[in-house]
Amino acid sequence: MRRWGMIGLILWLGFSVRITGLPALRHNYDHSFPIAQAALWREQGIWPLIGQRSTLGIPASPLATLLIVPVLALGPGPWLPHYAAVALDMLALALAYRTARSIAPPWLARVALLMAAFSPWHVYFTRGTWLPGWFPFFVALALWAWSPFLIQGGSPSPARIGWGWVGVALAVLVHPVGLLLIPPALLSAGLMPGNRWVRGVGAGLMLASTLAYGGIAWHAWEGPRTLRLPARLWPWQEVAFAHALRMVSGKDFAEVWMGAASPPDWLLVRLARIGAGLIEASIALAVLESVARGLRQRHGHSPLLPIWWGFPTVWLALPWPYPIHIHYLVPTLPAGVLLAVQPWRKLPARSWGRYLIEAGTWGIAFVWVLILLAADRNARLHPWTGNPEELPMVESAALARRLLYGLEEDPQTQIWLPWECAETTPTWLSGVVGRALEVRCGFRPDRLAVAHTTHRTLMVLFGTGTPPPLEPLSRPPSWLHRMPDGAWIALYEIHPGELRPAIPLGILTDLGWRLLGYDLEEKGNRLRITTYWQVERIPEDPARWAWHYQPFHHLLDSEGHQLQNPSGWGVPGHLWRIGDVYIDHTELVFPKEISHRPLRLELGLFDPNRVVRARFLLPIGETETLILKVWN
View 1 (cartoon, rainbow, N blue to C red):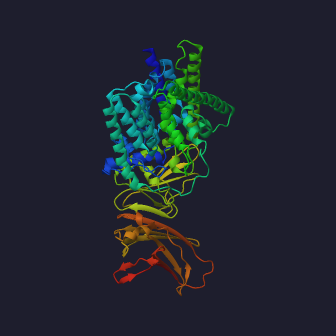
View 2: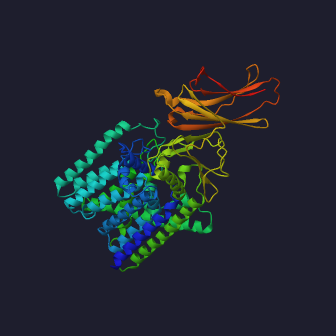
View 3: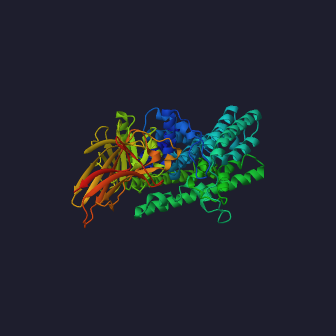
């Protein structure tokens, strides 16, 4: 009972470290994508054939999306999917401990569990919903199921053989890097004694599922991102071997994420480097010992654990013409932990060596926790990186709560992002909220606001300094969330029916837009012009995505010469929706020397991409321009 109490304590502490750090997790596009896909499937019945595209160019399967769908049934928002990911990692830790028990005594299995529970790279990669975070559980499941053979050379039961193939198949489908586990799995199944029929059926089903999705992925594959050849011979760089070791040892995590700038921080860095060196030396000893024992005793199972750990490492060390990311080595985590304790399995339970190793591991785990807390503190204190997709989850969740409040009152609330947002930001925001949203990028607080005839509109803006007013309507943000470093998230809200142009018109154009009216405000030599355009019909031209109509304003003298010709901001054609109202704001300056009067101001709609104008449909006929004002 005492032993299991210690195991429970380690698992509880590991869970606490992950949950405590979740608010500081930078909930980026990689974390949001499977949540956004799951929301689409659950709310709109859109089942994705492919998942997120990897940096290899090969898209992953939608397996992670499938795992998140039932979680979103409990409620929206980013927290529940991450809690589920952390809970699954706790199961991976429990499986790693059970596997370690087949290779080592209880005290050494606890050492393996400590390293898996608190290794900072492990914690960093598995407390989120991005694809690498699911690897440890699937691989740990396969290693536990086949541990009677991998560790002892025996024959697993048919049920465990089946569970092993389930783990391999899921690891292969969750990310293309999982394909690197197929050779070690087939080699293990081929050398495994007994149950040939079960092994064959399991391998066949695994390969069938892989090939079935492979056909879909092949058609969706974009091909190599570049055609350049590798710049150097093998190894490509130090990343592959070093990263596989770092997965367990935690090496370089403090330097990358903690931002050590004080003597106590540097002490933590030094201690972490010492611990990493000892762990990596232990893994190297285990690999050498396993290979030597296999050659000497002709045990086919002896080198298999190093192969499970080392095959992805060797493969990814080849000179590929793309960078090797550290998360590619996440599948090596469970096997790496087992190798780290293997050289010490014969130490007596009551020896100085045992107490030194166990106490040292607890000390390293304590240093790792301090480093994780420092890294999370830095992320909380300095949330703004210039990219809203890199905000800590606690800040993103504050935005999600406010958007969900608006969606509860009006499920068809229109959500807009600034015009310069990245193409991934709408999906990121949908994943943050945990709802299937149509998010459009196009508004600009100083030039263009967006409303809707029947639904509320929320415009989201991020930045630093002082939040700007929404110039077209001269109003401040309706909601403002400030972050510790002075950055902010703002929402501008427009309700249907509250738009009342000072000069109403209601003139339709052949484009399908209706000019609802306009505002004119003179201040000295400056003239503010705000026009209101409602989308009533959308042209069916398939090339509409390239259209970009924008208002133009001509200040003309008595002879028709243009004195000023400022253009509005406009909205690209692919963003138009029936019911949209575009509030376009423009300012012009009267010339200092005006010798010709009267002056008149004309308005029209112009598409610079196609060099065409829209026509106003008046009772007396069609015209390309309207006269808004005349100065006599």
